[in-house]
Length: 109
Image 1 (cartoon, rainbow, N blue to C red):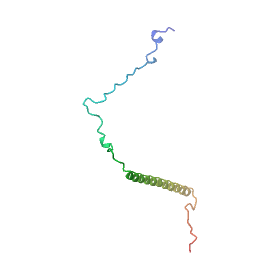
Image 2: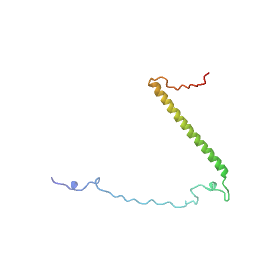
Image 3: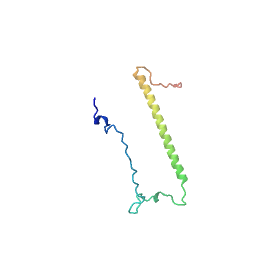
Image 4: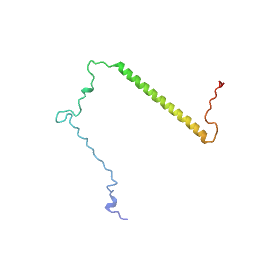
């Protein structure tokens, strides 16, 4: 078979191409109008010589701790209740009798 120029040269889809990337131009530090693009942050600064209110911070931390402990306790109670309900439901659906516990006190009379 005779090879033509077209067959002997690789097609453009098969050639490896190297793309040169240019670094993006950095914007100027200060805008042309002289104003900062960031709003004034002075309102978030602490007053010089001002002291922190540690008592208030401790009270807030204690309230947060109590809330988290209550949330964890409620989650554990909910999980335990769901496990007991699933156990009772499995017992009833399997056709067994006496699935719910019966509390008997010895001091009946």
